[in-house]
Image 1 (cartoon, rainbow, N blue to C red):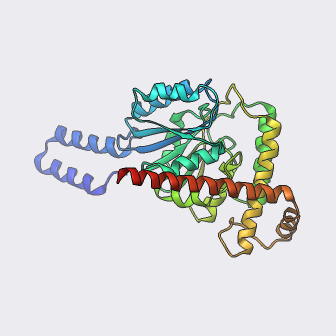
Image 2 (cartoon, rainbow, N blue to C red):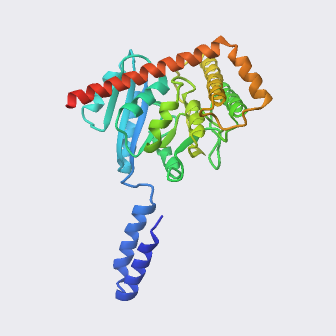
Image 3 (tube, one colour):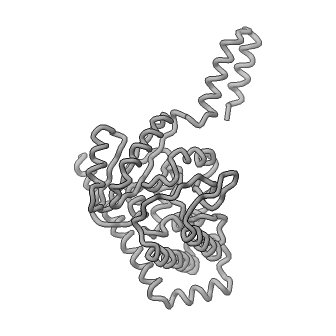
Length: 337
């Protein structure tokens, strides 16, 4: 907002000197710097996880560079290459030769979308704001403007394909809409959070909360976005969900049946871990814990080897990733010395 002292100062100068054009010009400059979304002082790291994305990476890089330069942001594009076997790395390297704001992080072992995002955010220097999005740009980079409208008052701002507000409905295949709606309903039954679209991969964070938030997130694969939100609410962070425009991608690298199974198991695993933390007096999801439903579900999941094994698998992957980050940082310090 405009600083009131600036307005008073301008008004007094106008009354004293009566130099109208001069002070209208000063006032205009203040409005431009304070109010317009095209602020040159926006500092942001944008993370894009990748795995075998040679069909989409070129368009993604070109659009992101074009938009960020147009906005005159202080930006960097962090492409996290999650052990691809196609030409993704070669295409990226070509872009990076002529653009220093493109950062490429290669992960030697597959850690999943969430693992790739956490790996980069926890191991690299990041700017004032951190966003991540999918390589297909189903949400155009311009949608970040909607998120930036709220980031000053919140710690995390997330896009939503289900909330529409004054936006048009999103055109998606029927099976995708049913899957998304079913997941949303199950999520709200389990966690009772005011979030309609927990799996939308378009999120904006303030830098200060990243380290603690991602340190507590365990899931590295399909339900990573959900784990981020559950952990954020558990930590008492301020979270805002807003409608965004979204266009369904033309390509799919994920089997729908595998996605349904993995996301369902991960969602129950997140709930199981959160409820276990509550029983142990630790951080937990924000809802009434002592309900009959909660106790019965916990007993049921405790007897499920599938849920417990998924929980242990996630812990193992996260632990290995954390150790690798620490080792890389120690190696970097040694080289600098």
